Amino acid sequence: MKDYNNLSKEDGKLLVSTARKIVTEYIKNNTKLKLENEFKNNFSFKSGVFVTLNDKQGLRGCIGYPLPNKLLYDALYDAAISAATKDPRFPPVEDKDLNSIIFEVTVLTSPKKIIVNNPEEYLSKIKVGRDGLIVKNGYHSGLLLPQVPVDYNWNAKEFLEHTCEKAGLSKDSWKDPTTVIESFEGIIFKE
Figure 1 (cartoon, rainbow, N blue to C red):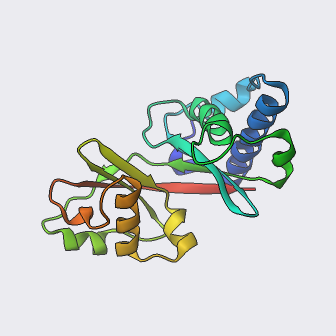
Figure 2 (figure 1 turned 120 degrees about the vertical axis):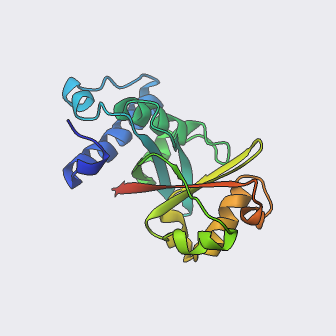
Figure 3 (figure 1 turned 90 degrees about the vertical axis):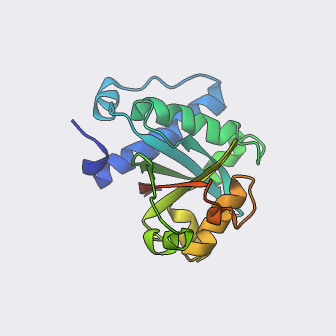
């Protein structure tokens, strides 16, 4: 059975094309695409996943599941529709938008807490381009995918600061001993 560690480029192409088909069917016909049994069987392992939509202006929607609580095919389905229609930062995607949108699917490993004795150690433990981050403190939580710091040319410190801000915290909250920092890896598949 497949899992995160043995996804091929062909699997990635299939995940991305299926995300597009799911969104297209939902937007054009207001119906849910029936996934083929073979697709379900191939992606029936639990995994976190994010679906990202970009157009020529940049980000157009991004929603997903950071934790492996759902089977990948099921999480992909929900994330694709949500990224297109429920990202509160953007208006819902319309039929006329579909041809100008590029779909991206990021399949995630389980998040793991980064253990440090001193917050400055985070800077050497986070690898930009490999790691995604989750910052938690109290009721606040924020996540940035591994490709984000690469896209913006951030170093590890800037990545931490922006993830803190995404969580609704001050940018230096990563230095607070009550803040929990988790990392995960992601395989990025893009049209």
